[in-house]
Length: 598
Ligand code: GTP
Image (cartoon, rainbow, N blue to C red):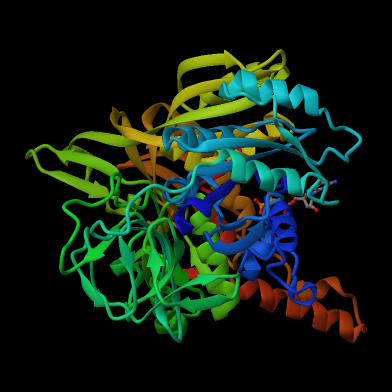
């Protein structure tokens, strides 16, 4: 009977449209927190997330709400991450719900990423409740947005709630629609256990905490359980719910969303998307749709100070406990010394990990330009996978090279269609589709090489559309391309960490840009340093870093001691991020410069 009063839902919104603020209002309305404890944006747990204003890890909150009819309801509000790198996690968290609030900013309208998530929700048969937020803003056009929701998504938006998460307007209406429109969970508590793992995190004291949705059956402490994909077995130590404080409970039963602790040592043993069942009376099959997440983007991470190597390994091991999609293995580079080759789901994931290592572990890093995985077919028939351009075999041994492609959707106002198409064309894109969403917004679809996105696509898209474009992509497969390895030589010596794989037609232009950039980025040395780009033995571009003429201090004619000291300190600061490559001092920026083409 309790089951019919459960409602499981999540909030789908584009970054900044007000998801966290609305979640806070819902928490307040259901009085889940004494006001004192109420911190802004409860659902975003980590500092870094708060600072960047993005949600990385999903969370779920258990709420009690008494409806106007006097009945008490249990809500589980499941938070979804907002960025494309995490779209698989989004789909798993949606699979834990029967409904979703679609929050759209009343002055902005729907964005490409939101659309992708709404389609995921529609595919999961979720009931969607449109919420038009920020109606208090002067630029709000709720009627227009309502029509846009109907035109673009094709759902009925006539009951859309006009809300202001800031003032609390509309919150009660939202909760009552949640009760009336979102169905209670199905399933039967007498069936064999099937629980979906939709997130898991590592806690220093408790080990892995898995976030689960019980789809069939029930689970309690002492139960022997099995992960159906990894086939690992554990004994349940504790189950419970977040209110948002963790509170242990006797059991979780069909329809419930909560946490599970079972003495699991590593998040890779409790993978997002896996199904938990009992060792005795197991479910005949796992829940549908489990997918292993493979990293798509790789880079080298090397400590600036070689003595930080083992600290860096510790940091990566720690982070891996919490993040089963992070991969790393030791590598050594002639230029950068010992470090790690690391794999990430996407660029944002990479930036977040780099930032956490520097900030939380205090290690200064030199990172190489990110690379994708290339499939290289050798003349002897062997297929090798290359995630580090410097490992590319000699041209004579290579039969053909394939690179990963993505299907990318860009959503822009009418005026920028030309600019977007020009950019996609320049990035070796293949046009597929273009559709008007309303009078002035267009969705443009291209097939693009992933590597072009890893380069400066985001930045160029932003600048060529004045920031109005939103963008989303998914991996579609490998295609043959005419790719070659380009080496960069400093002082006549190839620098492995600067090698890139480029399309042959673009090699000349890219080589020229890179050597010019390096000339500006690498400080003058005591001697003249030639910078060259080469394909095999052919030098295709060259520039020269002139020899240093003056000592820095000669600039501060005479007496001012503090100024002198400042200058020296500044120089030292600059040095911290330098690596000696042969006899040349190379700053961090140089290793990323192979990315930027502007
Ligand atoms: P992510 O966590 O990054 O996905 O963003 P979010 O969607 O959770 O947005 P958030 O709740 O952080 O809100 C973004 C900004 O909009 C904040 O500065 C809020 O204060 C503001 N905001 C949210 N709702 C409203 C509203 O109804 N009216 C107005 N005027 N501002 C709002």
